[in-house]
Length: 129
Image 1 (tube, rainbow, N blue to C red):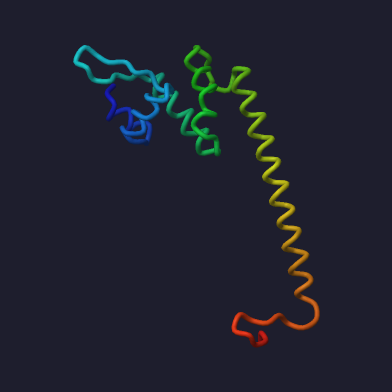
Image 2: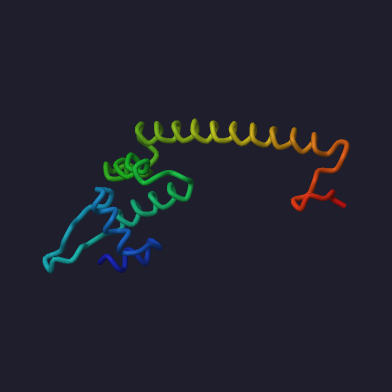
């Protein structure tokens, strides 16, 4: 298939496909007429990239999954390098969740402190009603 058809089927743009090609994530094959040519395996690569990006992975983090698929594995996450990326991402998410919990606790403490006694001053200098 040609680049336009692949972009449509993958739900992306031809510009994005060219960018992935320049980053080495999508193979750069050309037909006899000079046009880029793609197959179903390329569509599978793009779907893997898109899914991972939807999960919050950056483009470079998708590389091991793409390489795993290119190596002939049925799934992009069936290789050790892909599993390592999953583990790192889980560590990042756990750290972010811990940060958010700490912020939530601080806000809760502040709100509880403000809820006692005098009502706070409003932004215009008077008392809230």
